[in-house]
Image 1 (cartoon, rainbow, N blue to C red):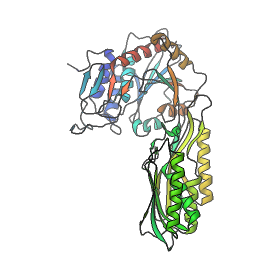
Image 2: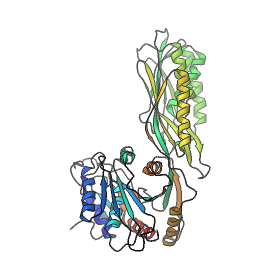
Image 3: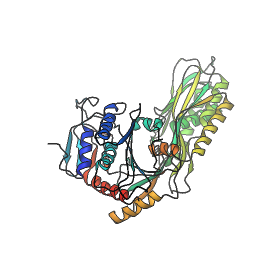
Image 4: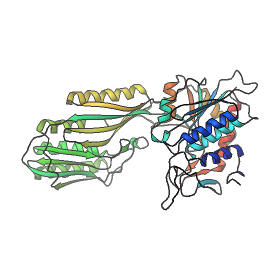
Length: 479
């Protein structure tokens, strides 16, 4: 007997359990992709599978819906694979061990993959149903979403006729996501020259910062350790001749860095320490709410690397104080939404250059391009360069959205209250689809998933039931 066979909606839970039996972590999606294709073949449905293992399955409209606009149901096939301490499961080769605890489904010792297996299960249940009236349904299952939206980036959307898309990759019931940021990784490279300089070697550290995710928490005004280090160096250079040996801080471009370090050679070590202490006092006051543990530490000694010359030192300090960082624009349409931002997340030094890696985000593509131009302009003046990678389109809020209006109406009837309509300052596959399919009307929803991407991940059964009822009603009314 299967673990979930007694749960409603039976078809959804059946497909979800089948999916959980097949390993499907990111970069390990061939088997789950072939499972989708086999499903389509067994039912005589049109399908398309590409080299990235993306799958499109199409079911024509039921009688009475032939003239209705097609509806796209979209989710991703890959899951995040994490295990609890002591769990010996090989998630590359073994399926999940499902269990039920009250209102929740979970996997023993591992992540569950409700993000986004439940979307695939719901779409397959729609494709499999012979008693559900609906327009042409185009189910789109992408791959490697969890590691950079990679499948959606290369998907050929030409088989899709629909311009209404219901994305099922949200994790909180009652929230309709209607906009997201596009973005890229921008890496600035500044060439440096080195020469001997007499003085005292010092290590300057900015540490104890709060940090956070550059999409979800950039609006909270927290200090960026790399940018803060630039201010400390600028203040120190006003009180003593100094030369930078290296600057390093941060581990990921999408994380606000919590610590950063500079190695310098100073003509007047006491003056540098005094300037750093004065700057620490100012910074502690500025960030007393957001970063109460902020500290600026100066210690004797550092690397024996030959320091940069005066011109290179000046340029590095200029770069770290003049580069744009943080929130650049707020949305005029959605209160409280960050529209455009960038985060200097990674700072590294090699023998001949200093590199600064940014995560750039905007739901308005022209503002994303504006930030790229600002970085190129500054680096051009300093004699450096910028490279851009992983560029993806933003999903701009649409004031006129018939799909959203219908969904709000259905939600109000079924739940007896208003849904929360919001946008997020992070990347979603919806943004890539919006960029490839002009005029796309899209909304993202999903059931309650708790502690996702951890071995404690679980999915609410009752929430799945309500979302299934909601989705099928939206399809019925999409005439």
